[in-house]
Image (cartoon, helix red, strand yellow):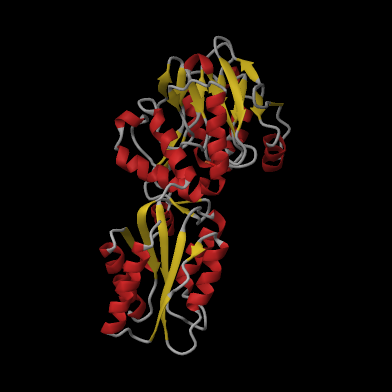
Length: 395
Ligand code: FEO
């Protein structure tokens, strides 16, 4: 890749991963690929902020060499130790053995344990600054955004915030800036990223944004470590984070189900009819045909989740398990859940799903909707009324 100057003598030297389709192992789908953004600050003490995923190490070095000899690097900032950002440290430190790593106190032992190395490190805490010549690096610890070690680097002379994972998104684009790309696609991916990665840390997100405001940090560019750089409207992503972190809901329901022979499918569509009649915005997903990360992204501003399954061996269908397990980990706030399903003899799916959604922190609607075998027209009418009642009890 050719370096891209994002501010005078500050370059994006990252890489575009067009082909990645799974991130965090199988946990996160990246339909639109991603980028690993690394930044080179040319000053009296040249500084690299973050590296890239290891398969792209040589691309990163080639980009740096278009601007300087890596032996000139004085500092390498490690904002976060996860391998997509620190994975090229071995290649960088081999090419620049004189460089000092700047990292948080939590990052230092994590770097040692990841790379079994003895590179020179300098620990920085919130409020610490390091002069690199005409410019200053100021550090703000940001634990759990995304790992305990995470921190932001701020360059006050440039009003430039380098927050690593925060304010990023998984999208591979040929352009680097927010004013050069399709903002609908970018915000879809930013929302998916927040919902599936940062949601459990929402209280910390709000606290960190407040802290940054209180510190009087003036920002005119946010350059995260994934996706596009916010230069035209950095406020857009900050405002979206505040909205998502507060758990602000719309009058919206997300219906997620699976079916064996079609009975639960009929119930799902009848409930949707009722919800729509009751004035709710609705999204319906048959989970075995759907991407569960996309479903979670849709759920982030839904006040109601409706989950359905037939019973098999006294349990719900296994295709719903990963989705429900994700919710237990993500623990979305301020949401209700309602359940439905068809069964033959014993039943059990609704009871088992109730345990999962309660564990995920949802307020369970007291009555669920269950039928034996295939619903009759009369039962489907009652199911529509059930959906209507759910919509009418919307808060
Ligand atoms: Fe992009 Fe937490 O790594």
